[in-house]
Each structure stands twice: as C-alpha cells, then as structure tokens.
Length: 230
Image 1 (cartoon, rainbow, N blue to C red):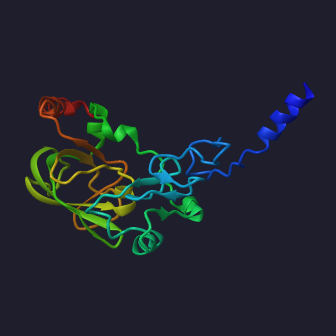
Image 2 (image 1 turned 135 degrees about the vertical axis):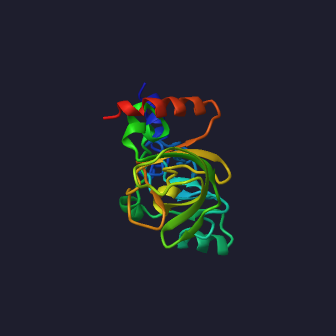
Image 3 (image 1 turned 90 degrees about the vertical axis):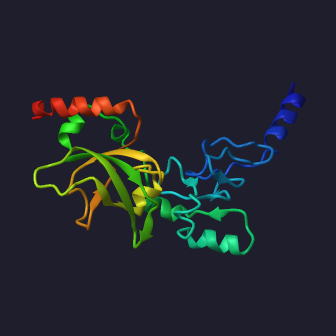
C-alpha cells in the first residue's frame, strides 16, 4: 500500500507548476504535464500571457485580445505588437499593467434592442448606410447617407443625405457600437450626447441596429404611437 502511495506522490510532484495569467487564462487549472494553461479566445502562450497573431489587446478583462480589423486599426497596434511584427514574431504581448486602465467590459445589451420606451427617450431615429471611417486623434469619423428620418427633435437639422457621426476609438475598438461600413443601420440617440463636435456623437448609450426590411412597419408604428411618449 505504501509503495503505491509513494509512486502516486512522486507522480503528482513531477507535474509542472501552473502559472496561468489572471486575465489571459480561462481557468486556473493547467495541464500538469506540460504546464499549458487554458487560454481565452485570441490569447496564446504557455501561461496565456500574450495576444495571438491577428489579435490586439482590448480594454476588456473578459476578452483581453480581440480580432484586429484589417482596415481600421492596422495602424493602431501597440508598440509591442509592432516590434514583434518587425522582428518576425507571430504574437503581440499585452501588458498586465494596461489591464487596469483598459477595460471594455460588456456592451450594453439594451442598445441592440428597441421598444417604444427607448424610441421615446431618444432625440432622433434615422436609417442610413455608413461609410468607411477616418480615424484621427482618438476619434473615428463616419459619414452616413441618411435614407429615412423617423424621428428628430424640434429645431433639429437632421435631414436625408450625408450626416457626420463621431465615435471614440475606445468604443469602436470594443465594438460598442459595432459598425460595419457599407451596411444599413437604424440609429437612435441624443443630439447632445458626448462631446460637442461637428456632427452627431455615438456613445455606448446610442442604439445602433443593423437594418432589417421588416422593421420599417415597426418604425411607422412607433411614429404613430409617439404621441403617448411622456
């Protein structure tokens, strides 16, 4: 009996110690033979301590590495990722120190759903197609070709045609809201939301929904019922 216990004891203590990254790993238990920790999506390394190729560090502890959009953020990779790329490396490290300051968290699920109450609480409701963004000084500038104006506040200058939208690059990186250029979107928001800029500012409180044709009747119904808004 003692011989069997001794063998088991030796077997257990031949395991490699776990040193899983507190943010990059999806759990604390590693493969005790190799020391490989279970990594979150887009994370790689024995201890899950860096972003895989094609991913960049996000502001979220839930998803620390997000897929790198080929057009929008290719020039906004971290200096560590650039250095790794220049040296022929396949991965970009992410700094644990940055995790304290860079946290996306989850997007507001309510900003992807629409009901009469939310319609009433927004200043405008418009439908249009987004252009490719121009990113400069922490902001992404979109031009939307507005096709329909379902709601606007008194004195608003919102009209059909080109309208400028601004999104802070932190929100865009976190996909809050998530926008794909060339797609039709229904957007509801406040005209004075966020910083004052030449155009409208989309924030994490704005409702941005990819358009479906069957929603046209719903929007007309909201227009008719808007008289009941408080």
